[in-house]
Amino acid sequence: MAKERIIVEDITITLYRKNIKNMYLRVVPPDGEVKVSAPLFTSTSDILDFIKSRKDWILEKQKMIKENKIKSPLKYANGEKHPLWGKDYTLQLVKNDTVKDVLADEEKFIMYLPVPKRSTIEKRKKILDEFYRSQMKAAVPQALERCVKIVGKTPKSVNVRKMKNWGNCKQDGRITLNLNLAKKEPICLEYVMIHELCHLIEFNHGKEFKKLMDKFCPKWKEIKKRLNE
Image 1: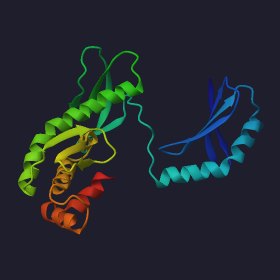
Image 2 (image 1 turned 135 degrees about the horizontal axis):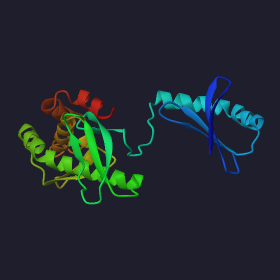
Image 3 (image 1 turned 60 degrees about the horizontal axis):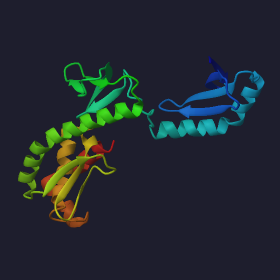
Image 4 (image 1 turned 135 degrees about the vertical axis):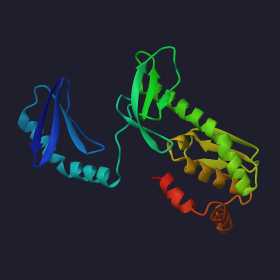
């Protein structure tokens, strides 16, 4: 596979010549880099015409990536940044078929991820998700104790799993928290916990619920914004 850089009408293109039949164009985050894959023997003029014909689409895609601050898909590779309790850690893979526990060095801010041979992105992701789950399960008891004293309500149970929302509360008193809260600042966990405990008093998100949040977590709006950044 041959790789080269070309500039077409002020757009920098990374061109790959491959053993393929058709041309393909991608605009990738986080910088909006333009990548073009072309068959080995395609003429330069045909490649330039192809890129020029997609110029408007390229510019629109780059604008969208910039405005929405879209990040590159995670590959769970050496050097990537992964958050833990609001701080960024540098990922370092460790080839190990016996040790399965992730180790976070709080002084060097390095996260050691043990991976088996021939591990896939999905397998590495699963190992790291289990690490975040364990971090949450370790943090929940103390956070729950503090928040129960604040709100005055005790849930039937508190579970941790991967979910779309940061948390939810069932009418029977069961609370579920998103394992990804382990990526956020500890205060975010307490905010979500208070939020769900308030649902044991007021089950909707109406005016009375917001009054409870103002009472038990005065800075909840600011914390919610930080949580969703």
